[in-house]
Length: 434
Image (tube, rainbow, N blue to C red; front, side):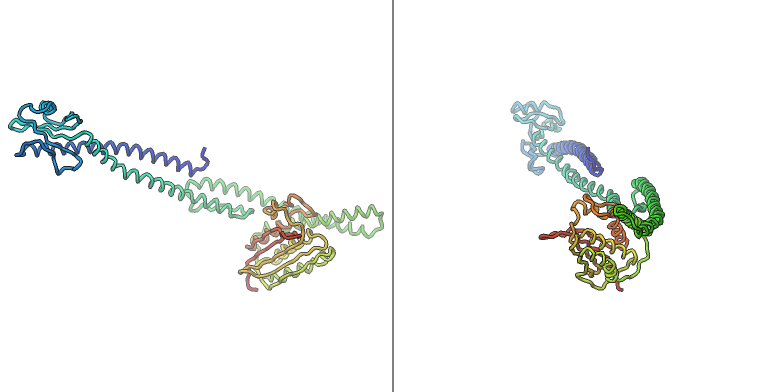
């Protein structure tokens, strides 16, 4: 069964047009054929009227009618005479008849003059049929030309009629993943109004559910942060006491778990803030200074693992953004690069301005990301098919949300080359004057 509604409409309307054209063409052909036969009978009657009073009475072909009509006047005399065909014709009554003359089927008109002499006007049936058929076929030419035009117009009208639906689908595909706003129903065809109403109702329920989920995550993270902080302080206090080596190992594991939990709660709160405040006020901030500040904060962490953290290019460039959010995004990217770079590796940063865009590029010498995971790397809690490290899969998701809010873009791509690997992250934001 054909799955396309447009295809079904086109096939159905094509069948109707072809069937209507065939029936109309057949009726037009029969009507034109009949009219052509009657017209030729009228010609025979007119010729008979002229021959009735003609002073010259002899058998002869009629000229001046139609070169292909082959009409002839046969004089039969006042009594039967001549060939058997002439005598048989003389015996027919006045009027139109179908007969055979000289071995050929003919249409014949018999007339009698006032003096008693008779004559016949003949025309071969084959000639009449050919002329009538040609005239009937000519009447079909407009219909034959009209059918393809109707099919093209049908396809055009169907395509234009479905354009609002395709435009609506395009708008849905182009919308952000977290955009659950109502679809505009103004200007949509009346047939789509119930459909749009149902979709908007569904989006409204999804929006309520997402808001509840965000509030729950934010509230849970906020409520858990206080006890986790208290437990971290207690663990730090215990570290100053004398204890067996086995107990200290367990305390170190506890402190490491507390740090991971605290980091997760901070990321959940950051994600909730981005979702709950889509219209954060943006001001002009110096991007190069923000990146330099983040690198300065993370230099000790990189140095502890002998990772070369530095810049290849730094240009002065400003963007319109929320400063705290932008710091969080840059810090997440640099921390992620340091975390996945092996000891002794390098993390290179570049800040530049290209074609009216502020560009941050961070390139590390880590293992990169499996190609099948690149498309999903910005999804919350997604850590790839081969997760490693202690992260929860929220850092890059937060980065993507922040960059999207600032009308920018972020691109993740693997670095390939002879004897090297790594991940290159390119962030582009609309540049502005400082």
